Each structure stands twice: as structure tokens, then as C-alpha cells.
Length: 249
Image (tube, rainbow, N blue to C red; front, top):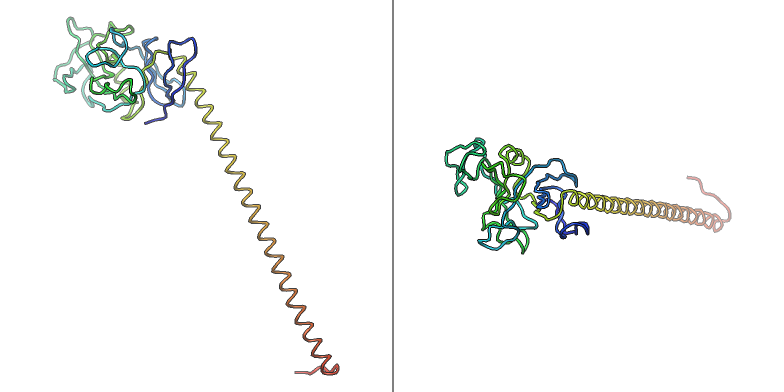
């Protein structure tokens, strides 16, 4: 899973939650989904969360808050408007806003809850999916899932990978982006500090090695000089003992 940290939203926002720097953020307040990359929003889409409110109780038909991950991607190579039942394509294709029709269509991103407050999400079949009822997008109207227009879920599907984090939050997208940006700045500063510390350690190690090499060289030089002096002294002693005569070879 990409990086996701628990931080508080601004005090003016409904509640604290989690902020993701690379992944998906869904704002209940804005009824929008955003793709986040390196702490910045790169794409936004209108969505619909549950008309029954927020929660994770089984049978509640509510949208769960918090950190999720994409557990499965379903619908590869299926045409736009393909109807899915139990996550299987039925072969039927419907156009947007078909009278009396409200099936899951086009693509499915099946979510898995990563926190205690959304632990039932996977078993409850909470998806990000296309809907035939596109006229309701932009206001809470689902039965727990995150609904999108077919054209938008096709776009999101190609950018989002399995395991990628999905945060469903009360906060606005602006608040989430602000926190994600701050998180990226903090991490960059920490990375720079670590890099600087490593470089300083390498320089100290290099200076230490250089000092040791110089000391070793000096010690070696002194040893050589001492040996040479001893040899000269031995020769002079021999000359002295021989009465000053120098033997020729």
C-alpha cells in the first residue's frame, strides 16, 4: 500500500481522519473523488455516497469512513455500461439514466477496510463502481458504495492499482490536499536531514581514514629512519673496534 498517515484535518472541518499522499481521497462533504499523487490532487470526479449516511454496520447501507485499500479490480475489457451481478458481467449493456434501472455497471473497485471502524467494508461489498443512474451523481444517493459515471470510473480504473489506499473522509478535498502537502514537505525535510547526516558521517569517516593513513605513514617513516640509524651505528662500532680500518670487499 502506498503511504497513508493518520493526521487531523483543519479545525473547521467536520472531523479528523487520514490523509493519503498517493492514492484516492473521497470527500463526503464535497461528494467528489480525487486522485492524489505526491501530495497533490491531479484529477477530480463527482461521486455519490450513501443516502443513509455514514457507518460500517452490517445491513446499514451506509458508507464507511477511513482508510481502505483496493482489494480487487473487476471489469477488464468489458464495454461501457456492462451490467454486473455478484461482480460478474451479465452480458447486458445499459445506457446512462435508463428508466427504472439502477444496476452496477462498467467497472468495480472492491474496497477492503484497513481500520477497525471499517473492518466490515469488504464483506459488505463496498465498491467504487459505475452506475446507470448518473443523474443522481453529486449528491448522496447510493446504498453504501461510491457511485461514479461510467466515463469517470473508466478513467479512475486505469490509474488506480490493487493495494492502493482509498480514504473516505468527511473533510473537503481542499483540506485533504493541504494536509497531504504538509506531510510531503515534512517527509522531504526528514529525508534531506537524513541525507545530510549520512554525508557528514561519510566525510568524518573519510577524514578519520586519511588521518590514520598519515599517522601510519609517519610511523613507518620513523621506523625506517630508526633502522637506518641503527645500521649506521653498527658500522661505526665495527670501525671503532677495528682501529679505524675499513675493510674493502
